[in-house]
Length: 335
Image (cartoon, rainbow, N blue to C red; front, side):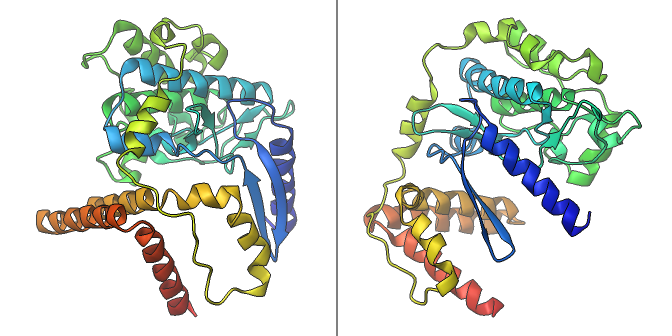
């Protein structure tokens, strides 16, 4: 893709973001250009992502899962009506507002489905959630049914704590997903409706999968609570992370071209972001723990992580200072 094609793709993406009108998709506020970078300001979802929620709880109940997936399907219903395929449905792209509402985000890899070209054959997305037809890149390409497969995988992840094939290397998963039998919950202790919903989403032949609209009528959602259950879960999770002071230490050497960006981060979006530093430290150290190669290293990382969280609780703003100093150090090393 040359520069002109790339620019056209960005413009089309921004035009679509501007016309989005769905409570189940993140809203677009502003787009501006800084040097050769395009900055897109989207709706802030203070509850984080469903991936954050799963890190804390491990897995979720069927009723809570149904509530989340129902919102995902309503977002997909809107996208598919607009001839768009999301192409990267996963927990990290399912966002939660401060009020416990669920919204689909990250349309950076979404694709247009025009009336003249209703199929795509690019491999885009995250391996463990990819539909078989996306990986195989068949002549027929793929369509909105690829999002339905990813929704089924995400449902399994919410209920069980991990997506199928998660223990495999990404390349191994890419080979196995088209070749092996579709994942299921048949051997798991879940309701019949839950198992049937997942089975419907994960049909190997795309045309056999229901549409988002059809799935919204599935009996799986009969257990879905009318009131959002996520607000209670968010409060319980956030209770373990004490927010630090809103007073912010400004950068020691602000760059002239960064003034506009700094202004954006010191507004209401910045306050909400700074209040999450202790949780970000916890999440980052958890990822380091996962990458540790032996039990001794894992024990050391876990102890260090717990000390960081404890220090933040006793000294509000310490995590912010750590992140800021690391940021300056990394910038210095790169220069």
